[in-house]
Image 1 (cartoon, rainbow, N blue to C red):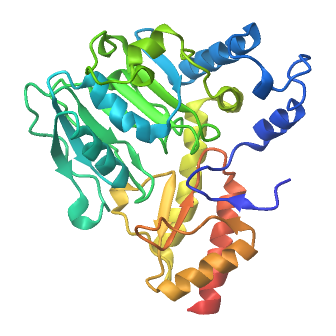
Image 2 (image 1 turned 90 degrees about the vertical axis):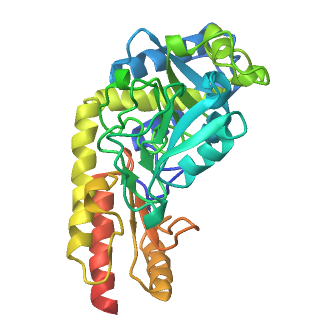
Image 3 (image 1 turned 180 degrees about the horizontal axis):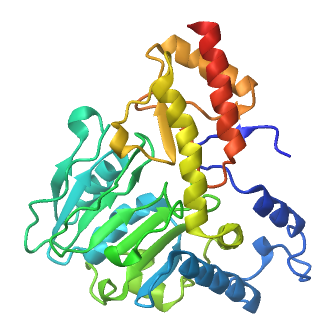
Length: 360
C-alpha cells in the first residue's frame, strides 16, 4: 500500500496494479531473462508490446482506421513545432489561447507562418473558456488549435469550437483517456504521457490520414516528420521503449476497469467531492467559472499566501503530496487523474475541513 497520495500535475500518479506488474517484470519480462529496458526495439517481443499498446488504445478510444497512432518523443512541447511544420501548408493557422501551454504553442507557430489568435481568455487570467461558436476563421487557414484541458488554470472545453470546416488540433495532455471523446471531430490529437497515461518520455499523436503528406515545410527535421514516423510504425529510431510498455499496461488497466465510460463516472465522482467542498468552504475557493471547470486539475486558494504555504506544508506531513500550485499563479492545485483513487480525494477534503476549523 502507498503511504502518500500524489496530487502532482505531472509526472503523476500511476495505477498501483501497473506499478506492481512492472516491478514483477523488471528483471525478467515474460521469461526472456531481460528487462523491457534491455530488449531491442527491433525485436519481435517489443513489436508485440507496441502493437498491442496501439490496438488497446484504438479499442479504448474507438479510433477509426483512417487515423494513425504514433508513439513519439520530445514531450507535448515538441509538437508545438511539429504541428505547424507538418500542417501549415498555407502558412495560416488559428489558435484559441486558454492558458500558458496554448500560448506557447501559438508563439512557436509564429515562427513558421501567420498564427492568428482566434479567441483568448487572458483578460480574466484564463479562468474561463471563450465563446468559440462563431470564430472568424480565414478561408485559407490550415487548422484551428486548442488546448482541451488547461492543467495550470483548471479549465476544460465543454463545447468544441466551430472551426468552419478546418481541422481541429487539440492538446489532450492532461485529460487524455479521462472520458470518451469522438475522435472524428479532430484532425489531430496529441498528449504527453506523464499526466494521465504513463511515465514521462512518451508523446502520443493521433492523426487523420489525409493530414499526413509528403510535403511538410522544407525545414522540418526528419524526426518531426509525421509521414516518416507513420511509415515506420513509430520505430524510425529507438523509441521510449519502457515508457510505451507502461502505457500499454495502463491501457489494459483501463479496459479491465470497464473502459472510458467507467473511468468518466469515477472521475466525475472524484471531482464532485472536491468541488462541492470548495463551493461550501469559508476558507478555500476555486477561481474557475463553474461551467468551465476541469475534472482533472483543480486549483484553489485561501486568499492568503502565508496560509497557503502553511496548508501545503501540513498537507505534506499528512501524506498529501504535491499540492503546491503552478509557480505562475501560486495557491494550490489538486490533480486528480485516472489513477487517483476516490479515497485519496476524500482524504484531501477531510484534511481541508480540519485545516479550516483550526485556522479560520
